[in-house]
Image (tube, rainbow, N blue to C red):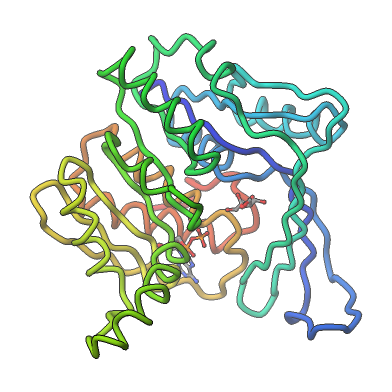
Length: 306
Ligand code: ADP
Ligand code: FRU
């Protein structure tokens, strides 16, 4: 068991299950509605707690009823809240999710009006008991400062960073991390960006993340880099430049993909902590993320998993 801190967001997710994804400018009735705690770092924390670790989450919280709901859910999921920054008079970031009953796809409209987590709040945390700290790649300059401060004061702590969205300057968060977790959206946006250049030069564009991961490895050879690719599984490259692939678990029917990536990330961190090799890590993580897609929410993910 390791002591792990995740730093990032906690949200209220209002999930409307719909028979089919709606056409624009139509009215449809949801067949079910559920309120859940969400947010990448807090979802990853909840899954890591199920994997048997001693988990804490740090981030910004509003002071409304939804924040109390989030705190109660984290407590019942055995996630400690540490160094949280409460903002008075603010409202909890909320995701309005349309969950398509036919294929489990989730479409998210996210509203946020809460300050980002501050360097001061992070630096007030006693990091000495932690073995691993995981960051969401957001609030770039401040997160870079947190990484620098962590690496300066506690060089023995392992670090992972989720690189999910093409936020300006986000690449600077890759430096010094042991594990980098890229999203399919991040890689695809990059491919689209470079496609214009490539068309000019008449070169071939690879639609899978292999070339992207080779390029990232060249830039940061001391890290493991991986990328989840939805129903197509996941790729990863190790420090020695060897590429690995795992197919996704076959899921039929797909119930709910919300938080599949956060589950995958938790399992990759768990694998890193327990010293699993990269190939086995990708396989275990696709298995757990696939198990998540078979059910709604994140509770009881390990039940019935072979
Ligand atoms: P995100 O939630 O960030 O969009 P992905 O869609 O890339 O994340 O999925 C993360 C992982 O979840 C994938 O690598 C895969 O293992 C699993 N997964 C996602 N969608 C499916 C699916 N339809 N069937 C089986 N596994 C899936
Ligand atoms: C799923 C998720 C949701 C949340 C959204 C925030 O990955 O963490 O729980 O509402 O993403 O971007």
